[in-house]
Image (cartoon, rainbow, N blue to C red; front, side, top):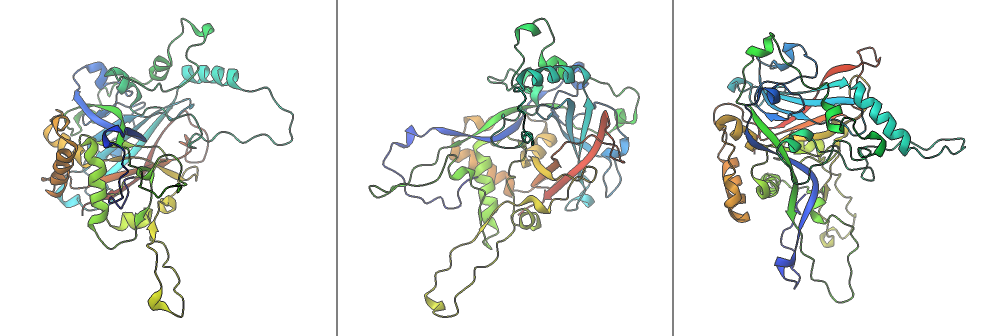
Length: 423
Protein backbone atom coordinates (compact mmCIF):
# COMPACT_ATOMS: atom_id res chain seq x y z
CA UNK A 1 0.00 0.00 0.00
CA UNK A 2 1.14 3.62 -0.43
CA UNK A 3 3.27 5.11 2.30
CA UNK A 4 1.55 7.32 4.84
CA UNK A 5 4.29 9.91 4.67
CA UNK A 6 4.80 11.07 1.11
CA UNK A 7 7.36 13.77 1.99
CA UNK A 8 10.45 11.53 1.97
CA UNK A 9 13.61 13.05 0.53
CA UNK A 10 14.33 12.19 -3.06
CA UNK A 11 17.66 10.84 -4.16
CA UNK A 12 19.73 12.62 -6.77
CA UNK A 13 18.91 9.94 -9.36
CA UNK A 14 16.90 10.89 -12.41
CA UNK A 15 13.20 10.34 -11.60
CA UNK A 16 12.55 9.15 -15.14
CA UNK A 17 14.82 6.18 -14.49
CA UNK A 18 12.44 4.83 -11.86
CA UNK A 19 10.49 1.86 -13.17
CA UNK A 20 7.01 0.78 -12.21
CA UNK A 21 6.49 -1.91 -9.61
CA UNK A 22 4.07 -4.77 -10.20
CA UNK A 23 2.06 -5.57 -7.10
CA UNK A 24 0.34 -8.85 -6.23
CA UNK A 25 -3.07 -7.29 -6.92
CA UNK A 26 -5.03 -8.10 -10.08
CA UNK A 27 -7.43 -5.46 -11.35
CA UNK A 28 -10.75 -6.24 -13.02
CA UNK A 29 -11.80 -3.66 -15.61
CA UNK A 30 -14.77 -3.40 -18.01
CA UNK A 31 -14.06 -4.64 -21.53
CA UNK A 32 -17.09 -4.22 -23.73
CA UNK A 33 -20.67 -5.44 -23.86
CA UNK A 34 -21.29 -9.19 -23.98
CA UNK A 35 -23.49 -10.11 -26.93
CA UNK A 36 -22.50 -13.71 -27.73
CA UNK A 37 -25.05 -16.16 -26.37
CA UNK A 38 -22.31 -18.73 -25.75
CA UNK A 39 -20.40 -16.31 -23.50
CA UNK A 40 -23.53 -15.27 -21.63
CA UNK A 41 -24.19 -18.93 -20.80
CA UNK A 42 -20.60 -19.82 -19.90
CA UNK A 43 -19.73 -19.76 -16.20
CA UNK A 44 -16.05 -19.37 -17.12
CA UNK A 45 -16.69 -15.95 -18.68
CA UNK A 46 -16.36 -13.30 -15.97
CA UNK A 47 -18.73 -10.37 -16.22
CA UNK A 48 -20.05 -7.16 -14.79
CA UNK A 49 -23.84 -7.17 -14.55
CA UNK A 50 -25.98 -9.41 -16.74
CA UNK A 51 -27.58 -12.66 -15.62
CA UNK A 52 -25.47 -15.25 -13.80
CA UNK A 53 -24.15 -18.37 -15.54
CA UNK A 54 -24.04 -21.20 -13.00
CA UNK A 55 -22.03 -24.36 -12.59
CA UNK A 56 -25.25 -25.77 -11.14
CA UNK A 57 -28.41 -23.80 -10.59
CA UNK A 58 -28.95 -22.70 -6.96
CA UNK A 59 -32.09 -21.48 -5.23
CA UNK A 60 -33.39 -18.19 -6.60
CA UNK A 61 -33.54 -16.87 -3.02
CA UNK A 62 -29.73 -16.61 -3.07
CA UNK A 63 -30.05 -13.33 -4.92
CA UNK A 64 -32.63 -11.83 -2.57
CA UNK A 65 -31.73 -8.87 -0.38
CA UNK A 66 -31.57 -9.89 3.27
CA UNK A 67 -33.27 -6.60 4.19
CA UNK A 68 -36.13 -5.99 1.73
CA UNK A 69 -36.31 -9.60 0.42
CA UNK A 70 -36.44 -8.36 -3.20
CA UNK A 71 -34.32 -9.99 -5.94
CA UNK A 72 -31.04 -8.14 -6.37
CA UNK A 73 -29.01 -7.47 -9.50
CA UNK A 74 -25.78 -9.33 -10.20
CA UNK A 75 -22.86 -6.95 -9.74
CA UNK A 76 -20.00 -9.22 -10.80
CA UNK A 77 -19.37 -12.87 -11.60
CA UNK A 78 -15.76 -14.06 -11.49
CA UNK A 79 -14.26 -17.32 -12.71
CA UNK A 80 -11.58 -17.97 -10.07
CA UNK A 81 -10.75 -21.65 -9.38
CA UNK A 82 -8.13 -22.35 -6.73
CA UNK A 83 -4.80 -23.54 -8.02
CA UNK A 84 -4.36 -27.31 -8.17
CA UNK A 85 -7.97 -27.89 -7.23
CA UNK A 86 -10.23 -30.30 -9.12
CA UNK A 87 -13.20 -28.01 -8.48
CA UNK A 88 -14.54 -25.56 -11.03
CA UNK A 89 -15.19 -22.37 -9.09
CA UNK A 90 -17.03 -19.10 -9.68
CA UNK A 91 -17.76 -16.20 -7.35
CA UNK A 92 -21.02 -14.23 -7.57
CA UNK A 93 -21.81 -10.91 -5.89
CA UNK A 94 -25.28 -9.34 -5.84
CA UNK A 95 -26.25 -5.86 -4.64
CA UNK A 96 -29.52 -4.18 -3.72
CA UNK A 97 -30.18 -0.71 -5.19
CA UNK A 98 -33.19 0.06 -2.94
CA UNK A 99 -32.60 3.40 -1.14
CA UNK A 100 -33.98 2.00 2.12
CA UNK A 101 -31.38 -0.78 2.08
CA UNK A 102 -28.33 1.43 1.76
CA UNK A 103 -26.00 1.76 4.74
CA UNK A 104 -27.22 -1.58 6.05
CA UNK A 105 -25.49 -4.94 6.34
CA UNK A 106 -26.36 -7.76 3.94
CA UNK A 107 -27.57 -5.50 1.12
CA UNK A 108 -24.59 -6.93 -0.80
CA UNK A 109 -24.21 -10.73 -0.78
CA UNK A 110 -21.49 -13.02 -2.19
CA UNK A 111 -21.72 -16.71 -3.03
CA UNK A 112 -19.24 -19.22 -4.39
CA UNK A 113 -20.29 -22.09 -6.61
CA UNK A 114 -18.20 -25.26 -6.86
CA UNK A 115 -18.45 -28.33 -9.06
CA UNK A 116 -16.14 -31.30 -9.30
CA UNK A 117 -14.52 -31.54 -12.72
CA UNK A 118 -13.76 -35.21 -13.42
CA UNK A 119 -11.76 -34.56 -16.59
CA UNK A 120 -9.52 -31.97 -14.99
CA UNK A 121 -9.19 -34.00 -11.79
CA UNK A 122 -7.74 -36.89 -13.78
CA UNK A 123 -5.26 -34.61 -15.53
CA UNK A 124 -4.35 -32.95 -12.25
CA UNK A 125 -3.72 -36.30 -10.59
CA UNK A 126 -1.45 -37.30 -13.47
CA UNK A 127 0.45 -34.03 -13.29
CA UNK A 128 0.93 -34.20 -9.54
CA UNK A 129 2.15 -37.81 -9.79
CA UNK A 130 4.86 -36.73 -12.25
CA UNK A 131 5.96 -33.89 -10.00
CA UNK A 132 5.96 -35.96 -6.81
CA UNK A 133 9.50 -36.65 -5.50
CA UNK A 134 10.59 -40.21 -4.68
CA UNK A 135 9.26 -41.27 -1.28
CA UNK A 136 11.69 -40.77 1.59
CA UNK A 137 11.36 -43.21 4.48
CA UNK A 138 10.75 -40.83 7.37
CA UNK A 139 8.63 -41.17 10.43
CA UNK A 140 6.88 -37.87 9.85
CA UNK A 141 6.00 -36.75 6.35
CA UNK A 142 6.58 -33.18 5.27
CA UNK A 143 3.59 -30.83 5.49
CA UNK A 144 1.64 -30.09 2.35
CA UNK A 145 2.42 -26.87 0.50
CA UNK A 146 0.23 -23.97 1.46
CA UNK A 147 -1.31 -22.57 -1.75
CA UNK A 148 -1.70 -19.20 -0.05
CA UNK A 149 1.91 -18.83 1.03
CA UNK A 150 4.17 -16.34 -0.76
CA UNK A 151 6.62 -19.13 -1.52
CA UNK A 152 4.05 -21.12 -3.46
CA UNK A 153 3.44 -20.94 -7.18
CA UNK A 154 1.71 -17.64 -8.03
CA UNK A 155 -2.06 -17.76 -7.94
CA UNK A 156 -3.81 -18.27 -11.26
CA UNK A 157 -5.34 -15.25 -12.87
CA UNK A 158 -8.90 -14.83 -11.65
CA UNK A 159 -11.44 -14.28 -14.39
CA UNK A 160 -8.97 -16.71 -16.04
CA UNK A 161 -10.54 -17.40 -19.39
CA UNK A 162 -11.91 -13.88 -19.60
CA UNK A 163 -8.33 -12.68 -19.97
CA UNK A 164 -7.69 -15.27 -22.67
CA UNK A 165 -10.86 -14.36 -24.57
CA UNK A 166 -9.81 -10.74 -24.82
CA UNK A 167 -6.26 -11.39 -25.90
CA UNK A 168 -4.33 -10.57 -22.75
CA UNK A 169 -0.73 -9.88 -23.69
CA UNK A 170 0.52 -12.16 -20.92
CA UNK A 171 -2.29 -14.41 -19.78
CA UNK A 172 -1.65 -16.59 -16.76
CA UNK A 173 -2.84 -20.13 -17.27
CA UNK A 174 -5.17 -21.46 -14.62
CA UNK A 175 -2.68 -24.30 -14.26
CA UNK A 176 0.86 -22.96 -14.40
CA UNK A 177 2.63 -26.18 -15.27
CA UNK A 178 2.19 -29.61 -16.74
CA UNK A 179 0.24 -28.69 -19.85
CA UNK A 180 2.96 -29.35 -22.40
CA UNK A 181 4.05 -32.92 -21.73
CA UNK A 182 4.92 -34.90 -24.83
CA UNK A 183 2.64 -37.77 -23.92
CA UNK A 184 -0.25 -35.35 -23.54
CA UNK A 185 -0.21 -34.32 -27.19
CA UNK A 186 -3.62 -34.41 -28.77
CA UNK A 187 -5.39 -34.14 -25.42
CA UNK A 188 -7.56 -31.26 -24.35
CA UNK A 189 -5.82 -28.16 -23.07
CA UNK A 190 -6.01 -27.19 -19.42
CA UNK A 191 -8.52 -24.48 -20.26
CA UNK A 192 -10.75 -26.87 -22.20
CA UNK A 193 -10.70 -29.33 -19.32
CA UNK A 194 -11.50 -26.64 -16.80
CA UNK A 195 -14.47 -25.42 -18.81
CA UNK A 196 -15.70 -28.76 -20.09
CA UNK A 197 -18.46 -28.72 -17.50
CA UNK A 198 -18.74 -25.00 -16.92
CA UNK A 199 -21.14 -23.92 -19.65
CA UNK A 200 -24.76 -24.09 -18.64
CA UNK A 201 -28.05 -22.44 -19.36
CA UNK A 202 -30.74 -21.15 -17.04
CA UNK A 203 -33.41 -22.76 -19.20
CA UNK A 204 -36.91 -21.89 -18.01
CA UNK A 205 -36.25 -20.82 -14.45
CA UNK A 206 -36.89 -17.85 -12.20
CA UNK A 207 -33.40 -16.59 -12.96
CA UNK A 208 -34.55 -15.69 -16.47
CA UNK A 209 -36.83 -13.00 -15.08
CA UNK A 210 -34.36 -11.66 -12.51
CA UNK A 211 -33.59 -7.92 -12.67
CA UNK A 212 -30.22 -7.26 -14.27
CA UNK A 213 -27.83 -4.66 -15.61
CA UNK A 214 -26.42 -4.87 -19.14
CA UNK A 215 -23.72 -7.57 -19.29
CA UNK A 216 -20.13 -6.38 -19.69
CA UNK A 217 -16.96 -8.43 -19.99
CA UNK A 218 -14.71 -8.27 -16.92
CA UNK A 219 -11.11 -8.34 -18.06
CA UNK A 220 -8.01 -8.49 -15.87
CA UNK A 221 -4.62 -6.84 -15.66
CA UNK A 222 -1.85 -6.54 -13.13
CA UNK A 223 -1.56 -3.48 -10.93
CA UNK A 224 1.51 -1.34 -11.52
CA UNK A 225 2.57 1.50 -9.24
CA UNK A 226 5.38 4.01 -9.51
CA UNK A 227 8.56 2.81 -7.86
CA UNK A 228 9.31 4.61 -4.64
CA UNK A 229 12.46 6.74 -4.72
CA UNK A 230 15.43 5.94 -2.55
CA UNK A 231 16.03 8.06 0.50
CA UNK A 232 18.99 10.42 0.47
CA UNK A 233 21.19 8.89 3.14
CA UNK A 234 24.57 9.91 4.53
CA UNK A 235 27.58 8.10 3.04
CA UNK A 236 27.98 4.57 4.36
CA UNK A 237 24.45 4.32 5.73
CA UNK A 238 22.28 1.51 4.37
CA UNK A 239 18.64 0.61 4.82
CA UNK A 240 17.66 -2.85 5.98
CA UNK A 241 14.32 -3.48 4.34
CA UNK A 242 13.63 -6.21 1.82
CA UNK A 243 11.89 -6.07 -1.55
CA UNK A 244 8.49 -4.59 -2.18
CA UNK A 245 9.16 -1.14 -0.81
CA UNK A 246 6.73 1.05 1.04
CA UNK A 247 3.94 0.35 -1.45
CA UNK A 248 3.65 -3.05 0.20
CA UNK A 249 3.29 -1.63 3.70
CA UNK A 250 0.20 -2.75 5.58
CA UNK A 251 0.54 -0.17 8.36
CA UNK A 252 -1.82 2.76 8.89
CA UNK A 253 -1.24 5.66 11.22
CA UNK A 254 -3.36 5.40 14.35
CA UNK A 255 -4.79 8.83 13.67
CA UNK A 256 -8.12 10.51 14.27
CA UNK A 257 -7.88 12.16 10.86
CA UNK A 258 -10.87 10.69 9.02
CA UNK A 259 -9.62 11.72 5.57
CA UNK A 260 -6.25 10.01 5.94
CA UNK A 261 -7.52 6.56 4.94
CA UNK A 262 -9.70 7.92 2.14
CA UNK A 263 -6.86 9.98 0.68
CA UNK A 264 -4.66 6.91 0.67
CA UNK A 265 -7.41 4.93 -1.04
CA UNK A 266 -7.86 7.66 -3.66
CA UNK A 267 -4.17 7.87 -4.42
CA UNK A 268 -3.82 4.11 -4.90
CA UNK A 269 -6.94 3.82 -7.08
CA UNK A 270 -5.95 6.87 -9.10
CA UNK A 271 -3.20 4.96 -10.88
CA UNK A 272 -5.88 2.86 -12.63
CA UNK A 273 -9.17 4.70 -12.36
CA UNK A 274 -11.11 2.13 -14.41
CA UNK A 275 -10.71 -0.65 -11.88
CA UNK A 276 -13.99 -2.21 -10.78
CA UNK A 277 -12.54 -5.13 -8.83
CA UNK A 278 -9.33 -5.66 -6.88
CA UNK A 279 -8.41 -9.35 -6.52
CA UNK A 280 -5.69 -10.61 -4.18
CA UNK A 281 -6.40 -14.01 -2.66
CA UNK A 282 -5.25 -13.96 0.98
CA UNK A 283 -3.98 -10.46 0.41
CA UNK A 284 -4.71 -7.20 2.18
CA UNK A 285 -7.81 -5.12 1.39
CA UNK A 286 -7.54 -1.44 0.57
CA UNK A 287 -9.75 0.34 3.14
CA UNK A 288 -11.97 3.14 1.95
CA UNK A 289 -12.73 5.10 5.12
CA UNK A 290 -12.14 5.35 8.85
CA UNK A 291 -15.08 3.38 10.19
CA UNK A 292 -16.03 0.23 12.10
CA UNK A 293 -14.74 -2.00 9.29
CA UNK A 294 -11.33 -0.32 9.45
CA UNK A 295 -11.28 -0.72 13.23
CA UNK A 296 -12.10 -4.42 12.90
CA UNK A 297 -9.56 -5.24 10.16
CA UNK A 298 -6.88 -2.75 11.19
CA UNK A 299 -7.33 -2.63 14.98
CA UNK A 300 -5.73 0.21 16.88
CA UNK A 301 -2.65 -0.95 18.80
CA UNK A 302 -2.54 -0.55 22.57
CA UNK A 303 -1.21 2.78 23.75
CA UNK A 304 2.45 2.67 24.76
CA UNK A 305 3.20 2.81 28.46
CA UNK A 306 4.55 6.15 29.62
CA UNK A 307 7.25 6.44 32.27
CA UNK A 308 6.15 7.66 35.67
CA UNK A 309 8.84 10.32 35.83
CA UNK A 310 10.04 12.95 33.38
CA UNK A 311 6.91 12.58 31.26
CA UNK A 312 7.35 16.05 29.82
CA UNK A 313 10.58 14.94 28.14
CA UNK A 314 9.24 11.69 26.74
CA UNK A 315 8.77 11.33 23.00
CA UNK A 316 5.96 8.87 22.28
CA UNK A 317 6.40 7.15 18.89
CA UNK A 318 3.44 7.12 16.52
CA UNK A 319 1.68 3.77 16.70
CA UNK A 320 0.59 1.95 13.57
CA UNK A 321 -2.49 -0.03 12.62
CA UNK A 322 -1.70 -3.31 10.88
CA UNK A 323 -3.95 -5.76 9.07
CA UNK A 324 -5.52 -8.42 11.31
CA UNK A 325 -8.46 -10.37 9.81
CA UNK A 326 -9.07 -12.45 12.94
CA UNK A 327 -12.40 -10.69 13.47
CA UNK A 328 -13.81 -12.19 10.24
CA UNK A 329 -15.96 -15.22 11.20
CA UNK A 330 -14.64 -18.62 10.06
CA UNK A 331 -16.36 -20.87 7.54
CA UNK A 332 -19.43 -22.30 9.31
CA UNK A 333 -19.11 -25.61 7.41
CA UNK A 334 -15.43 -26.64 7.72
CA UNK A 335 -14.47 -24.15 10.48
CA UNK A 336 -11.46 -22.93 8.50
CA UNK A 337 -10.49 -19.29 8.56
CA UNK A 338 -11.79 -16.98 5.90
CA UNK A 339 -9.33 -14.94 3.87
CA UNK A 340 -9.67 -11.77 1.86
CA UNK A 341 -10.30 -12.56 -1.80
CA UNK A 342 -11.44 -9.41 -3.56
CA UNK A 343 -13.17 -6.07 -3.22
CA UNK A 344 -15.62 -4.13 -5.38
CA UNK A 345 -14.57 -0.59 -6.24
CA UNK A 346 -16.63 2.63 -6.60
CA UNK A 347 -16.17 2.70 -10.38
CA UNK A 348 -18.24 -0.47 -10.60
CA UNK A 349 -21.31 1.56 -9.63
CA UNK A 350 -20.57 4.07 -12.40
CA UNK A 351 -20.16 1.29 -14.98
CA UNK A 352 -23.36 -0.48 -13.92
CA UNK A 353 -25.30 2.76 -13.93
CA UNK A 354 -24.11 4.14 -17.25
CA UNK A 355 -22.94 1.11 -19.17
CA UNK A 356 -20.06 3.30 -20.38
CA UNK A 357 -17.04 1.02 -20.78
CA UNK A 358 -14.85 3.48 -22.64
CA UNK A 359 -11.46 4.20 -21.11
CA UNK A 360 -11.33 7.99 -21.10
CA UNK A 361 -8.81 8.23 -18.26
CA UNK A 362 -6.04 6.58 -20.29
CA UNK A 363 -5.29 9.91 -22.00
CA UNK A 364 -4.92 11.77 -18.69
CA UNK A 365 -1.73 12.33 -16.76
CA UNK A 366 -1.31 10.58 -13.42
CA UNK A 367 -2.15 13.78 -11.53
CA UNK A 368 -5.23 14.43 -13.69
CA UNK A 369 -6.42 10.85 -13.29
CA UNK A 370 -6.06 10.94 -9.50
CA UNK A 371 -7.88 14.27 -9.37
CA UNK A 372 -10.73 12.84 -11.48
CA UNK A 373 -11.05 9.76 -9.26
CA UNK A 374 -11.11 11.87 -6.10
CA UNK A 375 -13.72 14.19 -7.61
CA UNK A 376 -15.97 11.27 -8.54
CA UNK A 377 -15.60 9.64 -5.13
CA UNK A 378 -16.34 12.78 -3.16
CA UNK A 379 -19.25 13.75 -5.42
CA UNK A 380 -21.35 10.94 -3.92
CA UNK A 381 -23.46 8.33 -5.64
CA UNK A 382 -26.64 8.85 -7.60
CA UNK A 383 -29.85 7.11 -6.48
CA UNK A 384 -29.15 3.43 -6.06
CA UNK A 385 -26.14 1.77 -4.47
CA UNK A 386 -24.10 4.04 -2.25
CA UNK A 387 -21.25 1.92 -0.91
CA UNK A 388 -17.61 2.92 -1.18
CA UNK A 389 -16.14 -0.57 -1.33
CA UNK A 390 -17.29 -4.13 -0.60
CA UNK A 391 -14.73 -6.58 0.82
CA UNK A 392 -15.31 -10.29 0.14
CA UNK A 393 -13.82 -12.93 2.44
CA UNK A 394 -13.93 -16.60 1.39
CA UNK A 395 -13.24 -19.97 2.99
CA UNK A 396 -9.49 -20.56 2.82
CA UNK A 397 -10.01 -24.29 2.22
CA UNK A 398 -12.66 -23.66 -0.46
CA UNK A 399 -14.59 -26.53 1.10
CA UNK A 400 -17.23 -28.47 -0.79
CA UNK A 401 -19.11 -30.22 1.98
CA UNK A 402 -22.68 -31.01 2.87
CA UNK A 403 -24.20 -29.51 5.99
CA UNK A 404 -23.22 -32.63 7.93
CA UNK A 405 -19.58 -32.41 6.80
CA UNK A 406 -19.50 -35.00 4.01
CA UNK A 407 -17.70 -34.42 0.70
CA UNK A 408 -19.95 -33.08 -2.04
CA UNK A 409 -19.37 -32.97 -5.78
CA UNK A 410 -20.99 -29.57 -5.94
CA UNK A 411 -21.78 -26.87 -3.43
CA UNK A 412 -23.19 -23.38 -3.11
CA UNK A 413 -22.05 -21.36 -0.11
CA UNK A 414 -22.48 -17.78 1.01
CA UNK A 415 -19.36 -15.89 2.04
CA UNK A 416 -18.75 -12.77 4.15
CA UNK A 417 -19.07 -9.27 2.70
CA UNK A 418 -17.92 -6.26 4.72
CA UNK A 419 -19.19 -2.96 3.34
CA UNK A 420 -17.62 0.46 3.78
CA UNK A 421 -20.24 3.03 2.96
CA UNK A 422 -18.43 6.34 2.72
CA UNK A 423 -16.28 9.04 4.27
